[in-house]
Length: 210
Figure 1 (cartoon, rainbow, N blue to C red):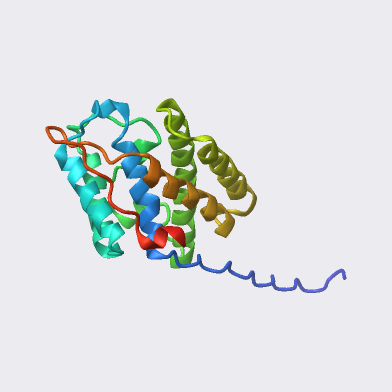
Figure 2: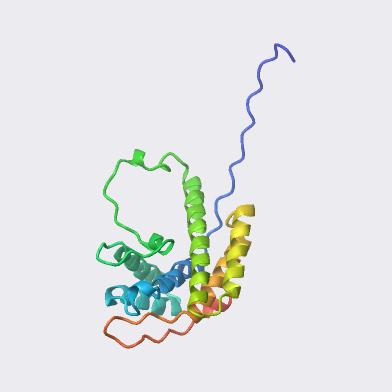
């Protein structure tokens, strides 16, 4: 109606916060890509013990459902990946590196004004995009090594489609977790430089139900 006061905008409903991730799945999504990363050809079949040992500790803790020590060992490995003394891993595996950043003002963080729930959603979205890239690269590398890869590639394609359609929902993560569960069965544990091959640990009891 002409002359009528403008009605106040309707409050928008905030999207629900992300569903908490089970610790065994959270660990699996970091553990399996790290195993693939240490199987890459750039290590010439024998990466440094300083890289292999944290993975062995993480695998052992994972098999014992010790999620805290699994995450701690993976954190150590990610920080060591970022050290300049190692060969540069190809994308997307280089994104497994976690460098210790220099102190900076909060305003330099593009997410610093976002609400905590929104920060979590953005972080999960970036992580999901990286998971798709890692899954696709893993399927390609498995095929190159002569390992079964058709199902890995199919799950990677389905995950990418699901992410574009509905975001990182349960369907998306089911495809991603199927890839990483298979990776732990197909990719051997890397051999430490100057040591014999490390036998793979038994799969965790949660793998069948994750």
